[in-house]
Image 1: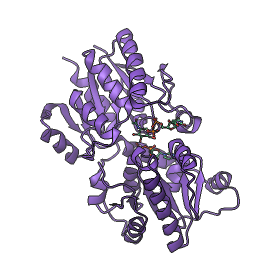
Image 2: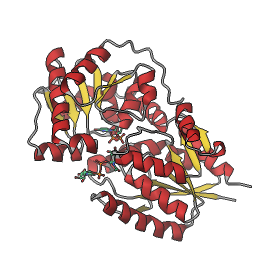
Image 3: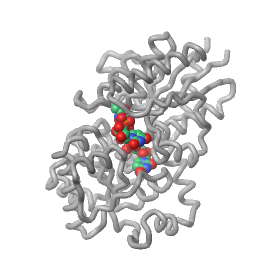
Image 4: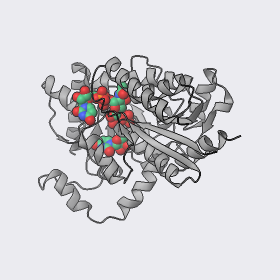
Length: 371
Ligand code: UD1
Ligand code: UDP
């Protein structure tokens, strides 16, 4: 019996983290698969650039839902995904992470009686004000396969009453993505020209002589006081260490910065980067300051110290191994976080697996359906 897998994606991190699953599907004999893109992200540098650079096949369907209020956006996805699933009748739906795309995909699949696999299951910030927390809790509780990145995330799921047979510790697919793409980066010798084309000749970036920052979370950038605290913190860090901060700015953050008329001295704001350029900047940075989930993981894998601009994290493994510290958004606390992390010995172990999560996930999904 041939299993048909439907992969549902919609945002930048899902394209990146599902890419190893897509590659595993392409390699797997006896499985059929197709992809739905909800269109939650649609700007070239938030979406298409990753398909081109990672040489991913196009989605069979793109729902083009675009931006909107949570209910409106999720509702449009739900309607669109449901119609496709009814027509295509896949055996399994795979979703990744905690976005509105994940909520819609998992809900549409499970209500139609299709088995749902949640990649990156069992993460909890225990902060229900975050839209992502609501999405991941619902997705976990309606899924049939929970692909937990660590034993810690498996234990969280068991603690919530989810049965052991549904849970598989696979590692995080971001490790596969980092390893696969680091190889490409290390094989390229045109990084100086590439960085010059990104920044112009005015800003010479030497490895270890700059900070990298990203912040885009709704609870941070949609709140003028919190966003101002983050930007002031980046200013203080740049000033204290006399190093520039590079901030590839997410469109949500760009919009809110303009709306609140905010700015920051010592911080260079650039457009969102393609994956290889971002990974290169991340691996050569002295320190990364971020509120991104994926960036907390990647810095931990790359052995680059990280300060997380949040009050909590659903990736506590990064802090436990010594790769990450939580600063919140108070500017002095951000500076304190940078002071703590800047001299941190980079000898921690990556807790997110060995880079075979994509293969494992597809193997489990296709084999367990067969009788
Ligand atoms: C979404 C996810 C978040 C994830 C992030 C990854 C939810 C609830 N949030 O947040 O968990 O960390 O993606 O980046 O699913 N915009 C563009 N172009 C785009 C996409 C967005 O300009 O391609 C702008 C629009 O002004 C839009 C805003 O960004 O209103 C927010 O986009 P949205 O997809 O709603 O949420 P993100 O902040 O991207
Ligand atoms: N990323 C990128 N270009 C950028 C910023 C981030 O390619 O300019 C990648 C980063 O390497 C990581 C992912 O985007 O793999 C993280 O996405 P984001 O921070 O938008 O979402 P989150 O992980 O917080 O959900």
